[in-house]
Image (tube, rainbow, N blue to C red; front, side, top):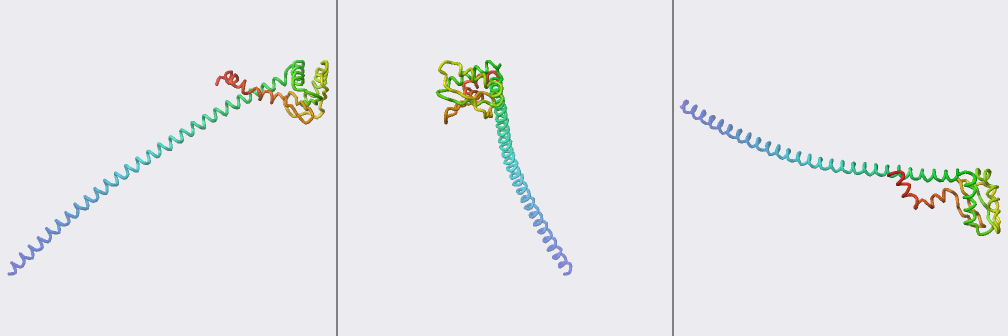
Length: 195
C-alpha cells in the first residue's frame, strides 16, 4: 500500500510538474508574443516619429533656405539701391563742382526760369563766397531783370540755390534737382551699373 501511495504521489507530482511546465511554457509563449507585439508597436511608433521628425526637419530647412534666400535678395537689393543713391550723390557733387563759369550760368538759368518778382537767393557757404557776386551780376545784367539779392545766411546743401520770393521758397539745390530727375534717369543708371 505504501508502494501504491508512493506511486500515486509520484503520479500526482508528475502530473503537477507536467501541468506546471505546460503552464510555464504557455505563459512564456504569451510573454514572448506580448513582447514581440510591443516591440513591433514600438518599432512602428519609432518609424512614425522618425518620419514625422524628418518631415518637420525638411520643413524647417525649407523655411530656413527660403528665409536665407530672401535675406540674400534683400541684401543685394539694398546694395544696388546704395550704389544708385551713391551715383546720384556723386552726380549732385559733380554739378556743384562744375567749372566756375558753367556753374554760374547754370545757377543764373535756374533763377531766370523760376523768378517772377523780387527775390532773395540763398547759396551754400562755399558758393556765397566763391560765386555769389558774379552770379548776382549775371542775373541783374539782363534788360528788365527783376530785383534780386543774395541772402547772407548760407544754406546747408551741396550746391545749387534756393530762390526765396516773399513767403515762397523754390528749392533748386542740386540734391533736389537730381532727385527730381531720378525717375527718368534711374533706369539708365541701372543699365550703366549693369545690374
